[in-house]
Image: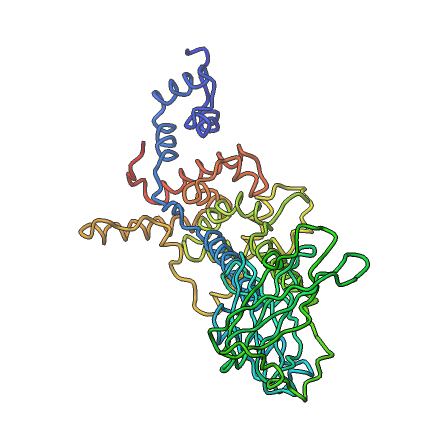
Length: 317
Length: 168
């Protein structure tokens, strides 16, 4: 290789690339050849290959972003929990009442007690009928101007508690006795009448007279009288129209029972003894809840806020 | 610009950290300044024109911040053997004194190099950057970085009195 003898300065220029093994094989061979015969250049090469004990940057020291991510994830999770809790709270406020007398009494005071007729009344739950998710509460409300009786309707929610849906009520024309309220869950002409007894200490039975009325004409064709025994001072008795014999004729219907007769233990008519002179039987009242979907609107707003927060915390920027 | 902050961070945080570690020789300082660098970068992301790579841009910000930090430290306490921590920590107490002297010698030798060469050596050895990256960061070529590195080592070796530092 003597014919390709390299100068020292060229070798020194080539050394960095030579050390990195970036030079052509032929060049490398020539440099190596030169180094073998040139102690000065060998010293330079050795110097260039010196290991400088500089500490390397530590790996994995950078956890700032992870920390930020964890914080954001935590915040997002908290938002989800808070949102769900708020939604549940709203739902629980709406479906608030339990199926027990104390809770239902409070519900009646809150939802029905504000009406003019019942302002000073004290509510008394007479009985409860449950049909799937619907709860019908028969109540008496003495203490106002009249003895008011009625039925309140509740609907069971997912939390096993009830929301108030509405109520129908009216004055009982007796100081004690029996009041009839048709349930609003009627099924064509067939319906359930709820008979409520209040203060029936000396009353042992009551008779109800149903009018069997012609459809369309409204003519009363005949009357059907049924007698029901009374076992308790306060009671609730649901009677479906199908229990009242009125034939299979579809052109007739059972109208509202227009006469209730109270009987004592000897089956004597004592109705007049219980007649309440102060009662004005000409009214009946009903209330319903207009904004039944408001709770869902509020829940949707909360959910939307929750989504906004979660998206904010999980944003990529 | 298509650079979103988090992507920028994920792609370049380690490089910026390594760069700052090369400059400062201190993990905590490097980490702190890395956060600060990205804070500044995010704030002025809209001014980034893309006429250099994001890495070069970020390193420029990092360097500026480190100089600012140096100014601040100088005002508080005069900068003494700051770069000593760059040198390998002793794991053999018996030879510590000797090594400490070695480290001091290396430190002093390093100080005698011109700043560019010193930076190249730190970037290469502490930051483990490629010569291409070093060239980019310093606005020079890959070849320039490689030659600087080996010339620097040669000079260091001479400065330290040709002492055998375990040449390969």
